[in-house]
Amino acid sequence: MFLVLISFELLNAQIKPEFGLKFGVNLADMRTDENTLSPRSTFHFGFEAEQQLSSKWSLQTELLYSRQGNVRRGRTEEGVKFDNILALDYLNIPIFANYYLKDGLYISSGMQLGFLLRAQLQETVGTDSNQQNVNDNYKNTDVGMIFGAGYKTDWGFNVGLRYNWGFTNVLKEPLAYTLVERNSVLQLYMSYRIK
Image (cartoon, rainbow, N blue to C red; front, side):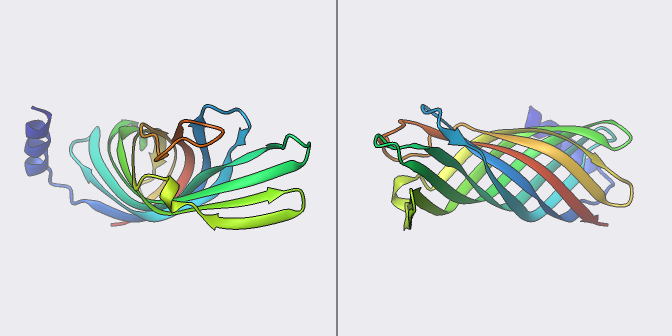
């Protein structure tokens, strides 16, 4: 029924889709069994397209390169400080609905599919540091839900805040310190629409 309504709205929509370039900051973390994790500050960028369905509703999809992961800090059993940075880079494809409240202010909700491009771990214990490819430890895809809010101006500038809540346990097998790792990413973004 929902698809029929969307199809009807698209057929009646006289407004052409808008396309834009998007970039922003990520505050990325993983939901795990452990409590020694810290967020990783990174970035995302890509393309977006929005089709207005009515004065209140629109459908939007994006193609984003997103750097995610986390930072694991603590001390070894010998008391030596460690600082491990997990870098998970994804190609994310969110599809969601925007509901416009008033004068360009909107809220968003939808789903996101992510494809893992790279998984790298930089381990620092004391003064020793090494970097290793950990692609084999992580699943190739991630599925999550997104929630957000933003503001779109009449001249094409868009700014907003979004949270990606990952459903998928992205680990192929449990690690020594956790059985589960799920993506958790807060994004502050800006975009410019080409009309």
